[in-house]
Length: 286
Image (cartoon, rainbow, N blue to C red; front, side):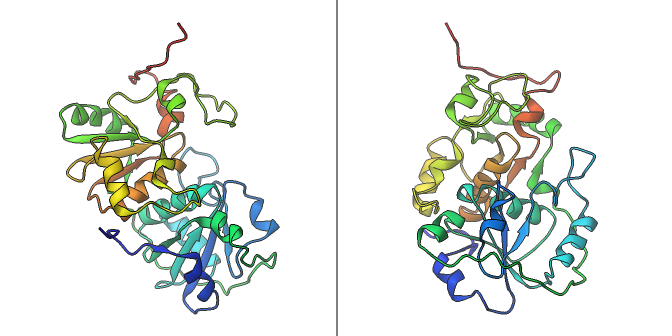
C-alpha cells in the first residue's frame, strides 16, 4: 500500500534540491528562536503564532493578510513549498494544515523534519536568505478542513451513531483527565481535564518512527482502523491547540487519503474551558 498523495520529501531529496529554482524551504518550529541557531540553507522562518494568529483575537489572520505575508517571503504561485520543523514536524504540519485551509497549493513535508536532518549531520547555516517580494495570488479558504466548537458538539451524536469518529491525539494522561497539559509542559489554564465524549485516544506519536519519519501506509491504516477510525467516517481530530492534531490530520487526509477529516483548532484549550460543553473523564484519584 502506497501513501495516498505525494506530499513527503526525504532529507536526501531536500539536500539534492537546495538550489533548485521553484523549491522553497520553510522552517516552522515550536521554539521560535531555534531558526537563528542554524537552519537549512535557503530556508525562511515562519513564526506559527506571530505570523498566523490575529494579534487581538483568538483567530487566524485573514486570507488576504496571509497572502501578503507569503508575498513578503518571496513565494510565488507554483513554488513547491517544503515545510519542516522541530518536535517531529508538529508545527510544520500545523503550517501545512493552515496553508491548505487557506488554499495554498503544492505543499510538502520533509519526512523526519529538523530532527532527522540534524541527526544525519547535514548542513545548517545562520545566514538568513533574502528574496525579492512578490504579489502572491489571492487565497480562498476551504472550511471543510476546519471544525468549530458547535460543529464538534453536534459531531458527538454522529460518532454515537457510528457515522463519524473523533480522534484525541493527546497523551493517555491528558485524555483520561489525570493532567491538563503535555508531559514536561506547564499547566496552560484549562479548567477541566478529560476528553470529548466518544473520542478515541490515538496519540500522534504512534504514527511515527523513532527518527521522526512516518510509518508505512499499511501500518498507519491498521493503527487507525483498529480504533474504529475508518475512511468511510467523518473524522475530527483535536489536541490542545491543534499542533499535534495537525500532524494526525496530515496522516489521515494526506497520507491515507481519508476524504473527510477536519482539524478542531480550538481543541482542548477551548473545550475544557467552555460553559455547557460535555466532557468524559476516566481518571479517578480514588
